Amino acid sequence: MDKHPSSAYVIRFADCDPFGHLNNARYLDYFLHAREEHLEQAYQLNLADHYKKGLSWVVGGHQVSYLKPAAYRERVCISSMLIGADANSLLVEMMMTDAARAQLKSLLWTRFIPVDIQSGKRREHPADFMTFAHSITVAGIDVAAGYDHRLKAILASFKKELQQT
Image (cartoon, rainbow, N blue to C red; front, side):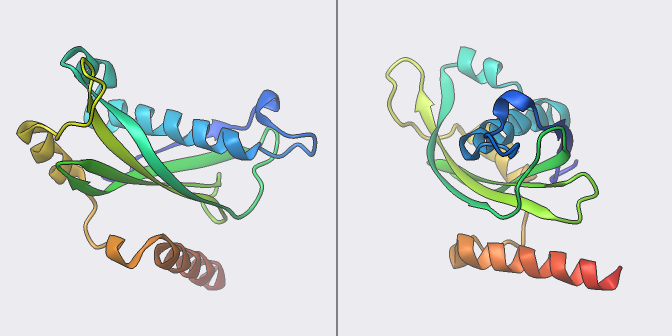
């Protein structure tokens, strides 16, 4: 099972600012669309199926860094992975790179909160969902150290890769 799914996207004109760079708010749309695609393709998890069962997720918060601009018509790669899961939330890391995966453009951590469709209130993840979530959670990421620590580690790995080429 691929715990690090990724997909390619082309930056669209309507999503760019006057300088031809992807608008900061639109990064979130690209990331969330990619994650939904990854769930379906890598895990055969369709969000609509959960919705029909009365479960959905809302965004509890984002931590995002915009490191290099994504330009109009540029092909980028977006990857996502589940890095934390408990009864009350999911923590997903997503990154956007250039097509060659040599340059980090943006890093995002998003916390998703499960909600009951009927009441609109928080609820805990069902046990069967937690079994699935733990099966796709990527181990070895020190979430407790925080977003900034993770960003520094990722940037260091990109720098190391660049030096080796």
